Image 1 (cartoon, rainbow, N blue to C red):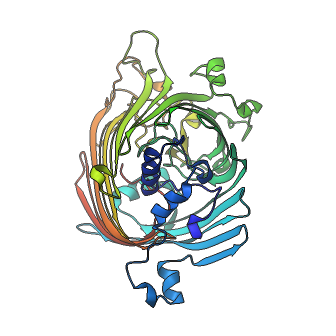
Image 2 (image 1 turned 90 degrees about the horizontal axis):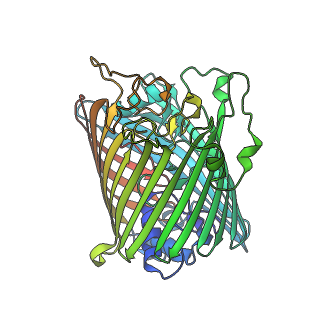
Image 3 (image 1 turned 135 degrees about the horizontal axis):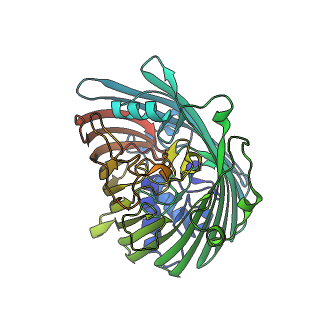
Length: 520
């Protein structure tokens, strides 16, 4: 029933859901491809066992005794709002909510989100998801500053001013998923993707707003091949009624090898095609349909007019409770011995997960390090950078940074507690009263790198040294496991160079179905 049912739909991208998938695949003696997400459930043999752990299937709500359940309490605490089952046809409809109230030392903040999510199976081979959400928000000051600068909410679309100091925004998402056999899956939708096994992705992440896509996944035991075609909309401060519809289009290919049941390596290629200029709009070349990984990189190189980057992923399950993972992304490289040259544009990730260590059921730990050199993801043309909807397609900090992440999540029946610490160092462009001696530090991927004065003086962190630390502690109760309705309380502490430290405390009634990244 409910969010648990759709066979050709995917696991959510939430960190909690990814932990449970990792715990299952690491402890099972089978072949699993876990890198290109969202993972289609039918590609994981025994996916129903993962669902049972996520949804605590068969466990009663801790709020009231089972014998006291009336229709109202069942709908609130243990069942879907609307559920239909007729043969192979399954349908669930549930609310999506986020009612949050918080305050810092001087101000009060609030978020008011309402929506619906619908999931269904039309047969064993055909599933669908659709959802819509509308929000009015009065966010923290640093988020409000971000909204003013970007004209978008992190991962949630364009903004409209609401009651002078607030913001209004809305969005929809969904897909149709068809698997003619166990080897093939086809998806058409408006959503997000994630390539990797960690908290961040340096290749393709769920940081930006939803976008139209078509994805094919081909799986034959040890080999999985994914093709993804996308359309990314531009959002610029100078947009007008014509320019706002400008788009760039992406072609992504990913080839994953299972060297053993516990070791996998993936090859990644991304091309952002220049499909809009001063004379034409949305002129998509036929070459975008080429499904062969590496072909365009070999043919055109990394400095072609279309923005091309390549990468490698790796994951090793040392044992049932320990998993190592990493990534390497390459945007360009200078062959001569010039380590500071701005053409040396690359980054890497290294991470470790402990999945229910010390035999503590439902305890998950993650430690991760990320670093990306200046100018990675940027391009000579501002329209060709590696972004969507005015946000990076990979890491929310863009480039020219070093980052350390620690995450701890513990679930006990319906209760949970999570601690997340993110510490980053990057070279900023400017702060009041200071001048940087070149056009850009390589941190802002939306700036063209063609205006750099010096080619050989760039190292990670160059520019104005900036440190940012985010500590978030959250605890709560999952009221309804079927629709992921949670009651939470939390605290967010943030330090940022040359600005006052902030402490934010909040309570919320929310539906946890997606990742929202405010740790920047």
